[in-house]
Length: 338
Ligand SMILES: Cc1cc2nc3c(=O)[nH]c(=O)nc-3n(C[C@H](O)[C@H](O)[C@H](O)COP(=O)(O)OP(=O)(O)OC[C@H]3O[C@@H](n4cnc5c(N)ncnc54)[C@H](O)[C@@H]3O)c2cc1C
Ligand code: FES
Image 1 (tube, rainbow, N blue to C red):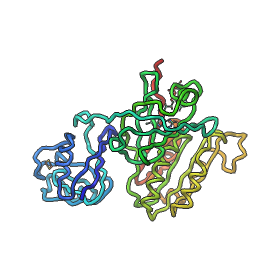
Image 2: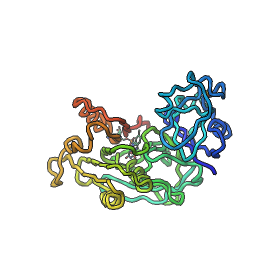
Image 3: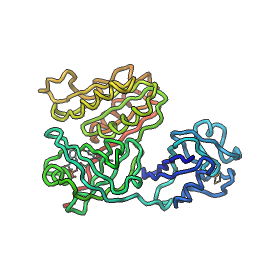
């Protein structure tokens, strides 16, 4: 039997390898040409230590100097002694460059472009090599802008289905990718995608979860919800999805469908504009239910434009709310070269 291991490097670059249940993770990585940190290969030095974020595994023999009892209890592992019993995600404490791992890159074709509202565009890509672009729910890729030498980062808003992946993009007037998508994109156009990248991905759900999405920062959560529907966790998951104007609210029907299908998933939408007639007005921080914070024992995932992400972080810091785990992704603008 073979399981899939995601190796997430310090810089967010992720590569997947397949490992047999009787194979050491270190051997599986080397077989795939990935030079993850290694020295003694004997459970003695601790060089190959990393963190297993999700999945089941066994560890062979090692000494306390390489991995303490406490570290093992925290799911630190030695890849030279590790065999997997399910799909796993490993966080490698070294950059992809140090491990001589290149970001995967491949062509893809525009499969569809949908104007979701005056401010949002959905598009999908048909991957040329679906097996070559596996990713964790929440991660992103760099997508080339046809007719230019530039690329923009976009979070997957779906998991792959029949080799097709979805994205959700804010239509910024005059923006390079925005203009391409709004005005010129044609089914069959070829783009290059590079990735997957990012440490903003869904971890195993073992406690209540709070999702905070700003604008098209909803995208990675849509991919996460797809995974949550499959995993059916027994924890409450609450989302607060905030936008500036009523027209920015998109995919609400999709969220309602997830709320009907995923036990424990609830969400609130919030609109900031003063002239909005929306029942929940203001910013996401004004609509955070006390129960969703669970006294701090909560996994918080936060994604959106930089000012929104910074405002939420300041809000939590000011109130001394320290979630058990906190993950965020800022949709920072690229440096614009024309
Ligand atoms: C890790 C990551 C993931 C991302 N995922 C997504 C995603 O899933 N969906 C999505 O819509 N965006 C996402 N972004 C943002 C995206 O990469 C682009 O920056 C954005 O789509 C604008 O590209 P553009 O070519 O249309 O505009 P550009 O030509 O890059 O910019 C045009 C003008 O608009 C300004 N601008 C750019 N972005 C913003 C902004 N957010 N707010 C205000 N002004 C801005 C620029 O400074 C510039 O002046 C992500 C960014 C990062 C870093
Ligand atoms: S390489 Fe030395 S403990 Fe694994």
